Structure formats: C-alpha cells, structure tokens
Image (cartoon, rainbow, N blue to C red; front, side):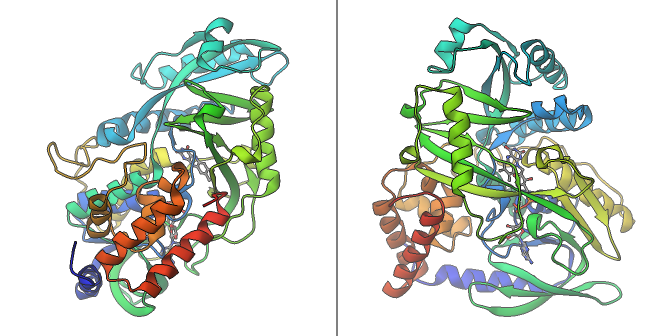
Length: 492
Ligand SMILES: Cc1cc2nc3c(=O)[nH]c(=O)nc-3n(C[C@H](O)[C@H](O)[C@H](O)COP(=O)(O)OP(=O)(O)OC[C@H]3O[C@@H](n4cnc5c(N)ncnc54)[C@H](O)[C@@H]3O)c2cc1C
C-alpha cells in the first residue's frame, strides 16, 4: 500500500499547476458532455482543463438507462435526423471504447389496440437499421409468439400480436465518463473532481475563474480564454449562461435476474412512452419515468409514485412475475437537462443538443444524450477554434481511447470483482477521493452486489490505508455512504 497522504499531495500539486499558466479552455462540469469537450479540446491541441464540483459523473451521467441508442422512439416522432446522428455515434463508440459497448438485442412486443402496432414497429426497425447504413450490431427481424416465450419467459400472452427484435448497446455511463477523461488526460489535458467554479470575471482577454476545492474548502483562481458551461441540470445557474432548461426526472430500479429471467432486453410500452427491462448480469434494470421536476439538483428522490409506475408497467407485461417493492435491490434517479422549447409533455421535448457562444469567451452546451457526447464535444471545440482563428485539424474520429496493449484495467459494462489492487488503482489513477466514488461511479458495486454492508467496510479500510484516513474520517465516509444507500433503495 502507498504511504499515507501521498495521494493528497498529488492532488495539491495538480491543483497548483492549474493556476500556473492560462488555459485556452476551462470546461466546467465533469459529466459525459464536459468529458467529451475536454477530449476534443485536447485532441485539437488546446491547453484545456476540466473542473467538476463533486465526483466525475456525479450528475445525470451516472443515472441514465446506460443505453447507446439511436432512439427508436424518436423515429415515431419523425425526428429522423436525430436518430441518424445518434445511430452513427453509437457505432463510432463501438470502435472508440469497445469494452464499454455491449451490443444488445431488444424485443419490442406489440399488443392489440396498443399505440405501437406490429406493422409500424416492423417498418420502424427496418428504417432504424437503414439509419445505421447497414452496420447495426445485428439485423432486426420479427419474432413469433413461440420464440417470444423463450426470449422473454413470462411475458403477457393475452392480446400479443408478436414482436420485433432490433439492436442497440448497453454501456456503463460513469465508466464512459472516466475513460474519456483518462484518455483526455493521457493526451495532455487536466481534470479535477471536487473543484467547483464559483464565479468568473471577464478581464478583456480572458476569464479569471474563481474555483473552490470542495473537499478542503480552499479557494483559488485560474485564467482561461474560454469557458465551456457543460453543467447539465446546473447549466442555467451562472449569470453568464443563456441556457433555459426543462428538467425531467427519470428513475431506474434494479431487481434480481431470477425474478425476471429475460434473455434479452424487453421494451414495455405505456401509451406513447416506452420503458425497458434490461438484463445486466445477475440483475435486471427497470426504467424509466419522465416527469417534470423542480426540486433539489443534488438529492433527487425516488418517490413511491415512481416505483409504483415502473413496477405497475413491468407487472402488466409480466403478470405472473409479481415484482414487488421487496424485490428492489437498488435504484437511481436522474434529471434530463432538456433544452426548454415550446410546450408538450416531458416525453415530447426534443433530445437534440444546443451549443451557443454567448458573450466573449463563453460557450453553453446543453441537452443531447450520452450516445452523442463525442460529437457534441467536437462541435463545441470547432466553434471555439473558429473564433480563435485557429485552423481546425481533424484527428481520427474513431481512435480508441486505450492504445493496444496499454496495461490499465478495461472495466466494462458489468461490475468487476472487488480487490485491494483495483481500489488502489481507482485512488491513484482515477481520482477516487470518497468511499462512494468507488462504490458507485468507479464500479457500480452499489447497484449490483448483495454484500454491500461488508464490502463497504472493506473498501473503506483499503481507502483509509491509501489516503491516510484516521478512524474518525473512515467512519464519516461510511456514514456518508449509508446516507446514499437510504436514498437509493439499498438496504445494507
Ligand atoms: C433517466 C435518464 C435516462 C437516460 N438514458 C439515456 C440513455 O440510455 N442513453 C443516452 O444516450 N442518454 C440517456 N440519458 C441522457 C444522458 O444521460 C444525459 O443527456 C447526459 O448524461 C447529460 O450529461 P451532462 O454532462 O450534460 O450532465 P451531468 O452528467 O449532470 O454533468 C454536469 C456536471 O456539472 C457539474 N457542475 C455543475 N455546476 C458546476 C460548477 N459550478 N462547477 C463545477 N462543476 C459543476 C455537476 O456536478 C455535474 O456532475 C438519460 C437521462 C436520464 C435522466
């Protein structure tokens, strides 16, 4: 194990370095969008840094459905351009981060009188494949009732007309953020978690950025020619920002796979909306909801009504399963930072992203999806380069994050087995500072494992040795983690 405090010293030194030389770009927000912007900025040769007020992927980017998808649902809304763009990005990610893209077949059953007639689904999935220009992870096809019973045992038979089967991919959202940041830092970028931008002052040629280390409450400053506001649900809080958001909440529940032994993901329609049952190793992820939200951005509750809704839809589709509250092992709630435009129900709001240069040296980027983050990052950087009068050079869009043979763990879609070495790696190379950083965003153990009471104690002990925590600090970390458990349907 490392000698105590050495990692804190590294952090101190790294933070000092941020103030030493002005940056070209400071990205604010360490979710998937900020990570994509940092990666693109560094690859364009800019001196770029990123600050995240909590842990990387603390916000929406660790609370998604974990799908890389073109968005079959958006086809029904006629948003063909959006689906084409996302489909291409989904395929690109399979080259850039293959360990985080697990192609997954989806079964979409159709019922008598439903909003999704079989003929329409059939046309839909064929167009969906066409928008992948023939390169989707597999060809879509029809599924008859007999096969349906094998692929999705227990699925409601009454009124079922058959199904279609199409391909998207499962990812690990917070690992995608971390690997993108790691790739950006390996190419010369700077990334700091637990550092927030408090305010920024424009001084004619550059911003003076007032930052706070939220672990030590130490305040410091750095200069940057550009600021990119990639703050997701927080994006409208800066006085410089022109973003207007409509936040909608979505929750997910995790249940044991044996309670819903589906072989492939199942699409469960509810009126115009669709929910998913997604197999995830020994678990199934159920979700999601889509309701307007105006509460705390930090503490997003999983309400009884949310749980009832998701279980209600699931039990309609799997009437014999009888999934109840007692089956829930964990859950998460996230906010979609949708760009407010027009009216309509939450599910009608466009998922398209918006990039705006507002005032000197300030860019707002908002909306979009996990799937399209690399593209969003590139478009932001292109706008900045144009205004800096710099020539744009286009690096290989499909360059893998990790070079062949690079000896770092390739953590994938499923949680890894816990070991002290892995935890050491997270602390030394992946910026883990708190117990919850490891339990939730580095590994997803929190959402997956049954032995969390014991595991969290062990991990806390390993981290204490690495980070020089005394007994009081260790207890504080465990208590903090237990609070998160209470809010995410996890019983220790
Ligand atoms: C329920 C749900 C399911 C979804 N499912 C999918 C899906 O399956 N596939 C898909 O492609 N997309 C999906 N999405 C959309 C996708 O998850 C989001 O579009 C994306 O994660 C948004 O990322 P972001 O970086 O904009 O925001 P965030 O991830 O929230 O990141 C913003 C970050 O900015 C930080 N920040 C804020 N203020 C400051 C400050 N002053 N200083 C420093 N840092 C600051 C925050 O702490 C936060 O971490 C889903 C969204 C939801 C809610």
